[in-house]
Image (cartoon, rainbow, N blue to C red):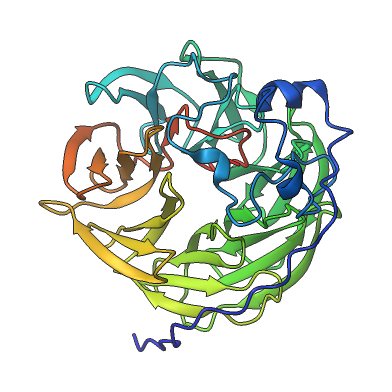
Length: 392
C-alpha cells in the first residue's frame, strides 16, 4: 500500500477565550465529585477560560491535565482499592488484577463483547460497555461487585460531557452519537452521523467541542458539545486510514489521533479543524496516554509490539520501547503514581505492565480472550470524561 506522508508540522493554536468559567449551576453531586478543595481554582487561572456552562473551572489554561498529578486522588475515590479492570471481548468477562501482586484476583461475567471499562463522570461507577450485548454493566469500584445491567444499544465506547450532564454513547455500527442522562442512561438525543465506526474522542480545553474518530471510513468529526451537533467533518488524507484513540495536548492547542493503518499519529488544530499533519510512530498505532507530569505521551503500536514516547516540550518522539517477545499493546492507562503504564494485549490474551521511567516490562499477565479497553482505577483527577479514563 502506497502511503503519503505529510510533513510533521504542528498547526498554529487559536487564542484562548477570556471570562470566568460558569459553574454556579453545578449540582451538589458535582461538588462531591470534585472535592471541596479541588473545586476551587485560583482566581487568576479561573478567569482565563470560559468553559462549557456547568463545567468545573479549568485549573490551568496551559495544562488541561493539571488535576492528574501523581496520587492526587479525589476524596470520592481515595479509599477505593487499586485495581486494573480488563474487559475480555471474546470471553464476555472482566478480569480484575491487583497491581501490587500482578495477579488476577477475580473474573466478573458481563454481557456480550465487552469493549471498554469506563469511569463515570462523578467517579463513582465503572461502566462496562457490552457492545453486542446492547447493555452496560455497572461495577462498584469500592467493592468490585457488578450491579444490574442497563439496556443501551450498541455501546462500543462511552464518554461524558465536561459538565457531567450527559453520557455520550459511541454507537459505532448504528452510526450514531447518542446523548443520554449521565446517571440513568435514558436517551436524550440521537445524533446520526454519515461517517462509519465512531469510536474514540476527546474534548477541547473549554469543553465546548469534541473531536471524534471514525474508524471504518477514515474520518474525523467535530461536535458542538452544548448544541449536540456535528459542526465539522473531514476525510483523513491517507487511503485506508483507520483512526483510533484521540487525546488533546496539555496546552489544549492540538489533538492527536492514532491511526492503525497509517502507522502513526495525526496532529490536528481542533479550533480551525483544517487538514492535520502526520507523525509516524510504528505499525498499528492505537492508544494514547499522558504521563502524570503532562510532559510525555505514550503511543501503543499494536502491530509491532512497541510503545513510542512523544515529548510535548521537545515536540518530538524521544524513545521507543519494544516488548520482549513481542505482543499486541492496545488500550489502557497510567497508574495513580505515574510509574506504570498498563496496556491490554489484544491478540495475546494478556496484559502488560511497563515501567514508565525505563520502558522495562514489569509483568505480563494472562487474562481472558480479546482483552481491550482496560481501566486502571482509581486515577487522579476531579472528574472523568470517559473512555478508559480521561480525567480533568
